[in-house]
Length: 235
Image (cartoon, rainbow, N blue to C red; front, side, top):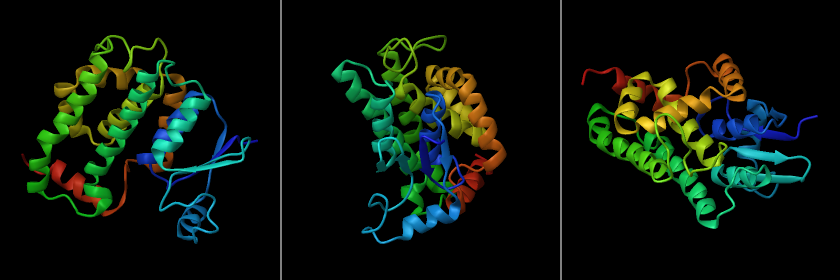
């Protein structure tokens, strides 16, 4: 019997962060069908599982809990499954890394798809994207992360911060290969961490299953099409 049910589109993007954590802790979960996700999203807030604007939504069946918003879901799973450091500052840093990842997704989709990418907009954004990579890199390095070893916050075992950083940059650069050299240049330790996390058996299986189900898609729709177009365009 499933411990959790995830409501998300048949795409990686924000839902993949939740999937990665569930896979890492060995949880059993099921995915709501696209029709169920769309119906729940469109429902009146008075009858929604949890009042929300859009997925992801996670049901914890054992706790009879319903959660929305990626950062809130990850905070809950991190707490429940022991993926947060004991030190209160490092716990706050874990949540900060999740918030940063959410901001990167927002910017990469041009404000959740409000605008399409153009060649000019992408050129203007590249220094900012590099700075985001450097922010993650410096965060890890201040806690002992190197290209060969270590973690985002100096923990011995991978925690929520590591799974989130790896999911953000590893998935993005796997789906958009032209971005990997940029990550290697601006954040080599993060690139290596992403590879180490991706090589964990549970993550290998998740990526295999996701690639089979979602193909090359990342966020989908016109915004992804416009991003692929500018990445293919001559520099």
